[in-house]
Image (cartoon, rainbow, N blue to C red):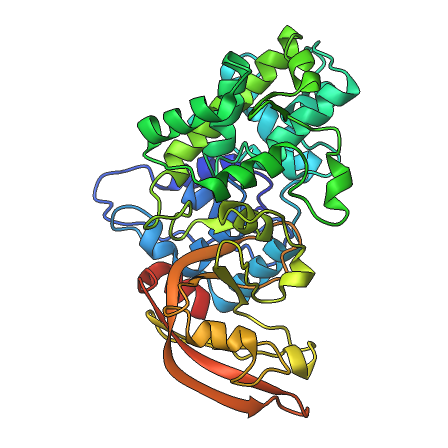
Length: 444
């Protein structure tokens, strides 16, 4: 195969012609010369059947395609092609309008109508979250208004912003609480926490405490964001206080009287709940996280029930929240060569169950954060590990959740290379050793 491929679907069709069974044919070798065109990432997308356009998923497939491809088939990317594919993946914008429109059009032709959100999942097309992530869109509604001439619905500016808020923050389905609250608000509108607490317990086995309640209140009243994030959705107030309880806000209640708005919100909620059941319902121990699923900094602050979000710069590798006594640790496993010596932390796995991680610079064994790490169990502090392969991907800023961990007691103070600053090297034992495919992807 010599022709540069511009479509994953066309590539599969071309490949299929060579795989048709003929008499006395036992195997076929396909040589595809893919090294020097910019859309070479379409090949792993085509072969894996994963249309989510998630960069980590594509990278993992290039590295371990033999594990994923069914039957006795094998796939091999030579070293030069692999490097060029990785480079193309790094520079590609999978929330690009052209890519979104192409996938949308394919699905529309297949269905013969404007697709619903769930259709993208049901037919294995592009992950709709790519639309939500696009800075000029933010919601499927906005996409349809801009690019679908047959779509006639038009919302007010405030309604459009609320749709964007729900799309970006909750529709991925990473936690059920917000989605269930919205669903209950649309039906009951008053004394919402009593109803919500009961439904979460009965339908999902999820208890609600004062911390999770305060977290939800802050999220739904725009008190959770920090910094510039507070302005982004300052009019998206979903609930307000009424006597000793909370009910629907006047502004959100007014919006729901518009049947078009109501229908869009309802579809978003059902889509989010479907996503939750499929991807995020098998919780790790007593947390809201799922092992090996991916989360952003904001997701982590939200799912740990912090009262307020923290900007990534303030987290800087790890952050302790006193009220919830939770201590998430974020590790960029691949470090670029041009970072400063004081931030060149050599975090590394010794094996799938043991991690060596370095404290922030300027720390000694007596530093408060290091002491909290070393004595987490005695102090009842919950340490969680989040790892991403690299931080060069400007689109996806997510970390794999790898569960709880505890310090083994082995800790060494040292001077960081080429500096006068000290740091502490801590050995960590993971509660659950990292699954082998994820482990190999991270360390290789």
